[in-house]
Picture 1 (cartoon, helix red, strand yellow):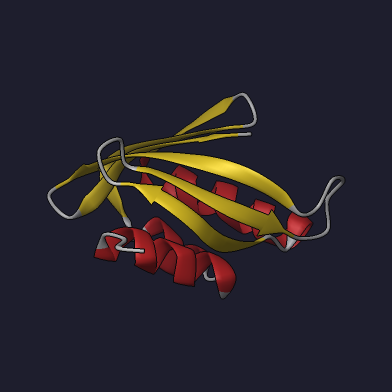
Picture 2: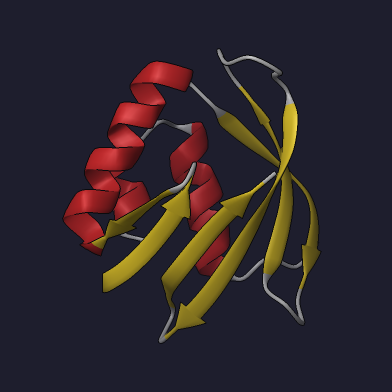
Length: 105
């Protein structure tokens, strides 16, 4: 699968539970939409993923990537009800960074 570098970096950061490296994949004014909430900017994204890492210990296993729509399908496994689950990560990329990410089931 041919993932853009920044998405590969995001997967690696998630699987290492490295919240700072995860947040550094995003543009300064990026947004993440997950579980009905929107997180704005790198600092808020880092805080959100740090809390999620501690609570769920979720890892990502990429399954498929739609290059035309920038959608990654990945198996998420961790300590949460229904694990593992396949999630879709809808990316908008800009200047080598993630501008927005929407995570859906």
